[in-house]
Image (tube, rainbow, N blue to C red):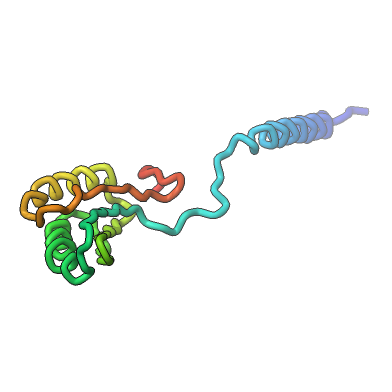
Length: 144
């Protein structure tokens, strides 16, 4: 009686596949904690806020002599999706919202350059505008 090697090969192949699958599963479970996963990705876009103060100035004066001038000048920066501003007693705040593909550091540099160029034309007594970079958590330009 001749025995077939086919059944022996089939059993050893099945066993090998089972061992390989089990080993890969264990390796996968070991590396799961090392994966970086953001379960709640940010829906906010990067933005820049420009804030300045002018003591005892009314919101109307700040709007006419500061906010509108800076807003018009900052409007030329590439990648802007939205510009909003708030003028209140003694304070102006302009927010520039950029699309997700904009290099926010380059936009910050352009903002600083425009402010530096326009500051001498602003009324005396106004503080030098401060720039605040608002970037969503874990924003990496390689992800987009």
